[in-house]
Length: 272
Image (tube, rainbow, N blue to C red; front, top):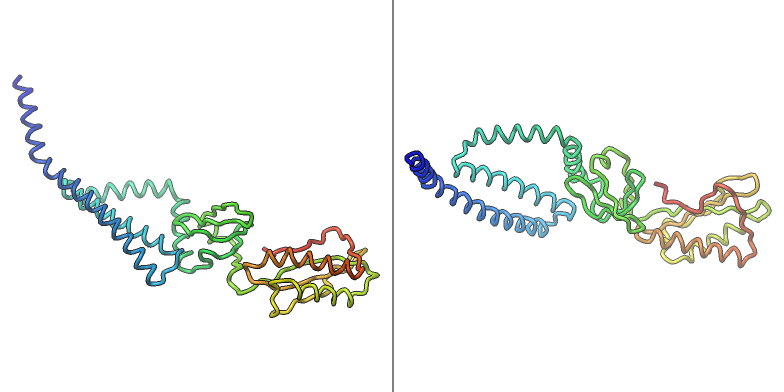
């Protein structure tokens, strides 16, 4: 009975000693998290008003929130009575172990920072990375989210994007639409050239400057490969691609020009 009373007294003493600190720590944690969320939201709005891009704003707001939460944890630990030096040492050891286990993620994180600093592409750009083509939807801390031309969602690790070849199709105001067609040797190329040029110039959304170009690209064993090069803005590329094919085909048919079949000749490509 005496031993039980001793345990009760020790428990009561501990409650009296640590309960106020624990309550205060929980209160500071609750209020601190609420304030941090408000600061992050305010920071995001301030960066938006300052003209900071949509690609870097979520990243910076997230980094600020993480930093403030780490400082809050240190403050709460100090209130409870945990030695901050021991706490820092424990976090350092844990961080080292986690870092070893997450080397790939850390490299993606570092690559994400480089992407935001050097900005080889930004949100909304049409890019080609690792054989994938699409519009950049979001640049996250670890990955770049792309929306493919066929509406597929593509997730590219930032380290893979930064270490590979990036083709930014939105970096310029316009793109060249590479089209090809094969005609028999018997056809008059100069006549075919004029027919194709008229068809391309009459295609909606084809740019006047640079002007469309038509020329002989190659000689096959049974046909002549004709290169057709209209230009279009980035967002109008596929409209021009398909409509130019349709109008050239119709124009050649109306003028009695035959089209040859040449194995290996591609009708068009972006060139990624």
